[in-house]
Image (cartoon, rainbow, N blue to C red):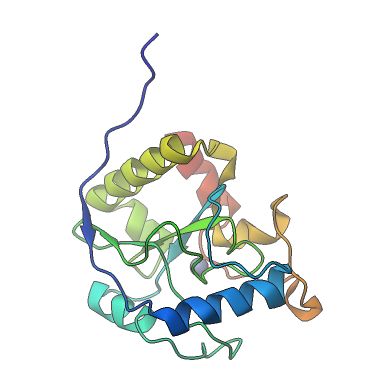
Length: 190
Ligand SMILES: [Zn+2]
């Protein structure tokens, strides 16, 4: 039997600064929120996101600085492992060995994939973005043995079985991007 391993899609390596200070901030974040002081990612979930803007460069610039985020006011700065731009190009901003802050309750186990756009319909209706997203997700699934049920939208984070958060006020915190109605379509396409 020959395993059906999808090919690695083209990925542009475009790293945000992730210096020793940012790694230390990530380790401290993991201790506060997960009770385990480690910046090492254990990939078991893929979380799909929407940037709510129209520019890859603006997205990169949002994630590049290691500053407290405007919503929860803590370091490290928020980030994502991958960004898919409107031309369907895949950019990788952070190595997959590192925890990245993109989904409260799942950052220690989740790979983050951002899609540049202002709505799920705009992303899904763009064939280049849709194909790139599906190719990247399938390849990550094969590489890390991640089931399609564990490819979730940000909006689905709180209900996931691996969701955990030590800070009580954040236990139900999530965002509205890629709700279940959209993710059913995405998972069916995977
Ligand atoms: Zn999101």
